[in-house]
Length: 192
Image: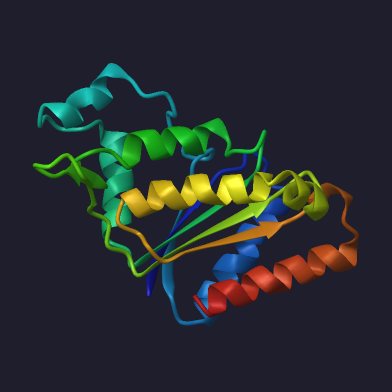
């Protein structure tokens, strides 16, 4: 399977980066091919601008959006690796979603006004690290809310097979727990 990994964390020494490395090593060992779009390293512009409204008039989209869309188009699967910040994703990834998964590329409206997804990918996965412990996310329902929001976005784009994985409380976990997390994401990549 050809996979695009969209990665959003500014620190190349972060645990998120270790997750990225472990996951992509698993992809490689599983016989998959992949590309990584490291949004911070490419300095992806997250703010939706006037030029992005070209989607509504049939004009060409900005080059950075077209480049990302080309990466999405040539894959069978999508993976997103990012930390949960304030119960959502980093702004740079939110901007990627707003700009790249636009109307005419990721979805369209039918004559009846229904939304039709255009990205018919075999599989998608979200791997999140969290700053809080698992009981907090479960007791408050925030984990379910985060999952629901992203599942709706990707379902609207035509991706029905979405797996969501949380790696909880990473800054307070011990080395053994982190090692288990990295083994888990390696296996997720290998079996993707």
